Image (cartoon, rainbow, N blue to C red):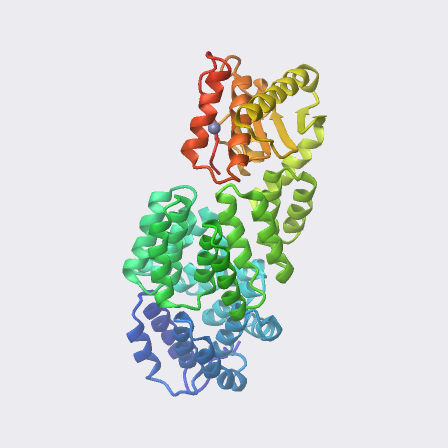
Length: 512
Ligand SMILES: [Zn+2]
């Protein structure tokens, strides 16, 4: 089948131009990219797309659009048209982006030319058609196995769908072909973020070393520093990102999130306004702030933030997934189920959402007991044995600790006790495992292993329950702003104070 390269260039020349232009950008060699573009006429779609990409990278979206529009109109199936559609998508102008992407996908997917399949895959990804994108990029890579851009896109597609193992494999393939391919280093960093944080950080540092103008790599480092609560270091990376592109939606969103958790609400609203001026339906700005608020144990605020985002971007499945997790941590299990099911219907690949929905099903086997502010849920097989112990101990802890701290807790306080450790782990973090932890507290929700989840004598669940109830007090008293070391120290102190032989148990305490 005939490819859709524009005359006067041959398919081979188009392919070479694509190789050279993607390499220049991946190597951070922007001067080379300009030089390459200048070898072609201003009306050439591939050269126009390259120049526009350089403008987009530094945030000059208007210039990029003005450059692309006439060339894309004259060449609706071209690199320039794809670049324009992706820009409209980024700016939230889906009415313009979607029809153009659909035409591109429809036409390009019929070609057997690898470059066309690669472009079709990018269009499919922007349309949310990941299965189609994946199949197109697989065919493209088979036909053209030596192009790092193809392997990198393939890795990014796996990453979109949480398959970090396959993603790592594709990024490694790209780096075997060209170890200076910065986007593949960054992709590898993202794929390893949860499993090997130090290696992830080095991979992102390698990306920055090779291509210092890559906003995404600076934001990745900033996010890691925020996870470590090192706001000073994060600020440095965020400043570097803004110096590259002061209109980056991702950079502005993270800056807004930092302002939010630092309780600078005016700055937060100002940043939100800036973001929405660029893209009025960018609900991500609220999802990102909600995510950081939750990492700081402020789950009710996280819920409100994500809901604000869903008002302007109701199709954001990631937001529904995170909303479900936040709601579980506030104790709203019915609300969590609604949000998680909504996410799962559109995005069945998210293993955390899948796990949480399975957990909610197994909670149907639990019985619920209420007393004052306390709601206790126990597995029906354990309820006859544990009910009185758990209710009276939790109640005693609440009364004793509230009295001594002179603080009235805000209920209801939900305590869930799990006979299967993995259910406890999923209820707490969304994933099985977490072998060291026995209990966790989120402010209004306490989770713990039941004696049956552990080898007899391995831990004293009463001691753990008391420790977690002390977290309820100190987290709530500080409006969820107590430093980790302090709430941990107080819980350990209260545990020993309640009974001298209650040694400190391992708990997840104050972590995510
Ligand atoms: Zn603790």
